[in-house]
Length: 327
Ligand code: NDP
Image (cartoon, rainbow, N blue to C red; front, top):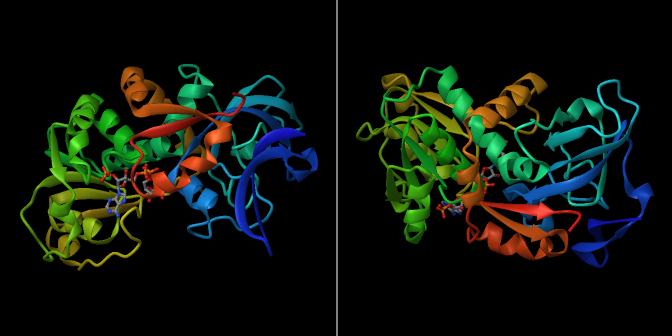
């Protein structure tokens, strides 16, 4: 038996509980990991609360990411004692995940823990931070350079938004943070935002094209915010779309794309190929300031993870929550 969170769904309803879990609950896989740290991402909170049907099999251990040490392995790349990180691949949705003391996964899904990070720091970054890095890599790949103009980051106080601000500022970009919590402006400035704007500037239905404001965008919100971000991106600019915190619709027109040559890049962290993951984690190790990461992070024990779900989805959590799985 080991301790963890189990999501069950039956006649008694949908529930997530912290409990002792039998070893047999773990699915097939060629690597078993002693999980040391996990984290709470938006999708984890959808799973914990049942607010959206992200869990597809029951019983399920939630947790879309974890960092820990290999206990045993029949995979050629991994052996007992290796330090590893996992993000995505359906873990915590269709395959038991990281909010438990043990996980069994495919070795092909694992990435070596970058030597610069402790397991705790890797999960302070977590899937949100790794996704923020995927957005930054996409901006770079499409030629957005520091000095080209402002980069808009929406959902700024969230996990993806906070890490994106810290990364972009460290790389020399001028960051404009859009938030519904202007009271957190000092926090956003301390992460490196040059300017903080009220998200209501972007969240209402807007015109097909507006004043050109952004060289690039990291959007975690979707819906009218994404549409307005595209409509106000300057000629040749790049918009990365990774989230739906404000809605999954995209009420836009083709105008930004056909009149301003704006590029809209979709960002997916779950099925991203290993080569891109290696690149993202290597760049996080190079470009993320650990002091800023500490500003972003709050720690909780595994026993308190379920209780965070509602507040998280209500947009009341700032930055990242790292989960001490062994604590
Ligand atoms: P968080 O909940 O930490 O952050 C979301 C932020 O969005 C909030 O802090 C809030 O920021 C803002 N927000 C919340 N509700 C609304 C709303 N109704 N309208 C406008 N803004 C809102 O989540 P994460 O940062 O972990 O994830 C952000 C999004 O990215 C989620 O939709 C998530 O599913 C997605 N995601 C996608 C991934 C991928 O692979 N594509 C991977 C990881 C995350 P503020 O208070 O500053 O306004």
